[in-house]
Length: 496
Image (tube, rainbow, N blue to C red):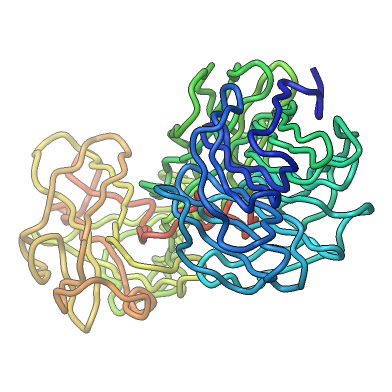
């Protein structure tokens, strides 16, 4: 079978049909002979019920399970009809006189007149956009958010929901077709002269869409997609999401593989190994034996920005270092990749703690609602004996220095913790600004200083004495930010 091939032909229940449309489970028709609108059974196109048309010359009809759109050539009106009894719900004016066809679904209205193809707003029937019709005498239009079917006297065309351009066309079963409609996998067509109704092969291809992301974090996120239709095999061999830092990622980029799927509907993927603060493009995809099909791009940011020391802060008192002296201790702890003992700071002197503070650059990537800040430090204790609380992580905001518990006190800080004899990353989290008790603002982030307090090595810090060393300090700002899919009209109704 191929696009436009006849799947079934049935005599119309009323002669001279002028419109047909709907979807795979609801078929709506109309005729000007008796000024009727009616419902057909999609299984055999037999009549289920009929009612009077709202005007004398119904020229097109379509919709879905929940909505019926109808147009009239005599009164130059478009209508919404009630699915329950086919009565008129409301009416409006089309953009041009003599509408020749109308259809769509609950969120789209596609129509045509002798010179144009157009989209109407479902709320008030106002014109959204229009283009010049393809060649031929326009006789019908319909479809859904993913496919537009358009007919001339002897041709059936598929139009793009993106720009209403023609994608493909094929000869119709007769030379006087009048109405067309359907959905992504179904084409209904009627013939005015022969009084036939047809189901034609839509030659379906797989359609997949992308939805808003969830659980977006600094290194992981959840991608969401939906399979709208299958191709001829009614299943897919692979599906998932792919992502990259450039638009239009493919399965040659990072991807998830969720395997086969033989039911339409939603699916989710766990994206991992994201780089904090990086902007990504992501698409849902499905693969069948014919090809791989992709959704629109979705733009998102791995919602964490890393800020590393770039200048001296208000305090520099850790007594020893490997690298730069005070006030430039920040240069010993600012590297992206840890260099361990190559550059570090470490404390010695009398019992207690010594501490440094470091300034940070202003944020450049982050936006949206800040969920928390994490201050990280990479630390090591140089001796096993004695084992004691030996480090504290600090931030300064609003003129006050804080550790994890209370405003910082140098001797015996409340937030101090033990450090191991191996280099390990430690962190403290502030979900709100401790100075205000309110959620962080980006201005407050830009004014932050962060630092480390290290227990002094009693006896001068010689070999074998307890000593806490630090080789990295950095700030991680975690915020809520997820992308929005591109404004492809075909995807609009499934973007959450």
